[in-house]
Amino acid sequence: QVQVVESGGGLVQPGGSLRLSCAVSGRFLYMGDMGWYRQAPGKQRELVASITSGGSTNYADFVMGRFAISRDNVKNLVSLQMNSLNPEDTAVYHCNADVIGLRYVSNNYWGQGTQVTVSS
Image 1: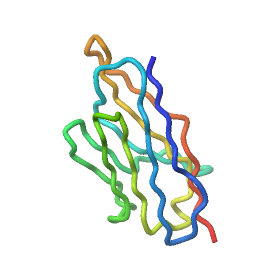
Image 2 (image 1 turned 90 degrees about the vertical axis):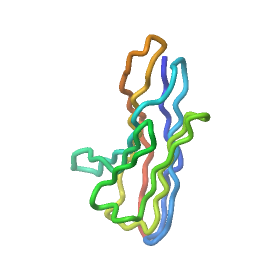
Image 3 (image 1 turned 180 degrees about the horizontal axis):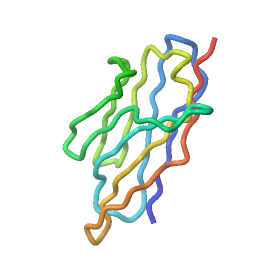
Image 4 (image 1 turned 120 degrees about the vertical axis):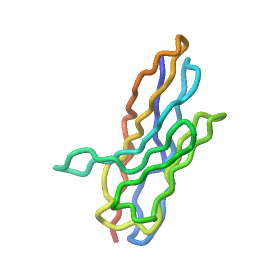
């Protein structure tokens, strides 16, 4: 069984910063490609940033250099540093994980999400 748990969300003022973390635990060999998605009320879930197993990153256009995704393959963590937040960034942020299991089979998991609210 694999668990994906996000943390680090909260209430922040416009222009502020937050750092989200995604911890992957359970029985598996290693993490594959990882991603952060977000879903605002009444909107579809959208990709924010992704990072491959080799460390290559990809960002949504709306990020505009404000966010940075990183990973720690030893601690099985993926982080999203978010700076210069604005109210349009308010959403539930979800971690998505490709996890390679004990038989070298890849499975995809979603975390429950962490709420980010940007408001004065």
